[in-house]
Image (cartoon, rainbow, N blue to C red; front, side, top):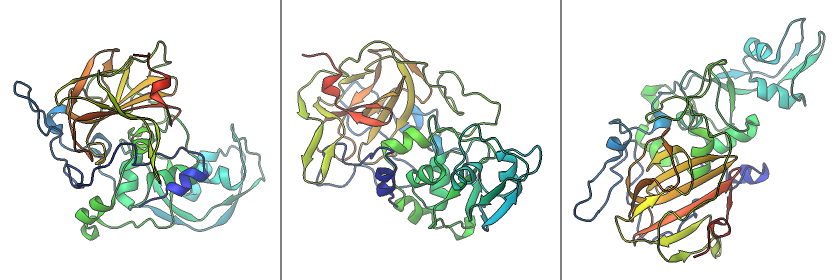
Length: 355
């Protein structure tokens, strides 16, 4: 997979999987279509929670609950002459190409006003028509492509909620196949995710006039983020910082900090917000929680041994969202903690109170 260079070139924020200290041993959960339980070992007296229990009984990740039919249409390059009453979306529907791709091809800018007789170049490509509830990650996985590259070639922007009927242009290496032809195990093993994928591609598509749901546990549609961030961040748990933000070794960068914590230590929300993700589909981090605080701020809590919140749940600063552990690519119990502003990692030590 891998279109990390595309993300760098497009200044979309490089979200490397080297965001924690990797161990020599393989991840605690091998890549598979059905996740294993989040919990590994917890002290006596703590309840063991599987991912299925945390997410409402369904072991599938939220971003894959809606199956994607890989029935993309190949469109040939052409020129379309605008008629009275045409809109960019209407032109996309008539030609089979995505309106975003047409806008990019013709250097059009919002509000995308067209005039009769205008000649629009229709870019060739393979286009997937988004169905209700499909997510960007799910679509990328269905075609075996990198979601970050789909963002780049379609010029998608925040809040990255796809609309029903939207036509996404797919990378050149996209491979649409019928379900009978797909090697599900091989595709699952080859498909990788990082935090940026979850942030930008896990929201289910909405109809044109629908609005994201307000915060409440077990939301299966797109979630409205908090309007704005107010207040300050607090430490998610006590403990010694064992790895700081920035370069760790040649070619390795820590996108956050790592805090030593005994297995079963409560993990607290660093500020008010809404849970954007809770699961273990990013193998390097193991149990992972993402909280959207509004205003472009997001916090991440990795290597959790237990997850006590669900996607869409509103939390307050200090609420317990899980228990620390040693899941993912670490050998000792710890918490990997990140803060991101507009998708870019920032040094948590500069945002947390001194201690």
